[in-house]
Length: 116
Image (cartoon, one colour):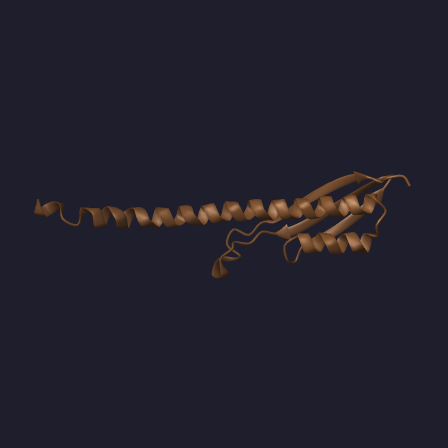
């Protein structure tokens, strides 16, 4: 019986690093998903605004407010279609680990220009 003493501590010590790694992986996947949702919403909203006849500057400003900080917005209007592409880098929601697993992501939305 005495030889089994401390066995739970040893098992816990080997499992804890995997739990921490899993938590980081989960945070990373969530941050990727949230970034993708934000840039998709930003590009869609800007494309709709321009297709309705609002100015490119106003739509770009709205896209930048919806997108994560540092996002780049490009607008292309060609043959009755508006294409808005928003590009941003994903970031972990932890202060010291914000660049860990950082990925450049983009989303493009296309809308047909509405006739007056």
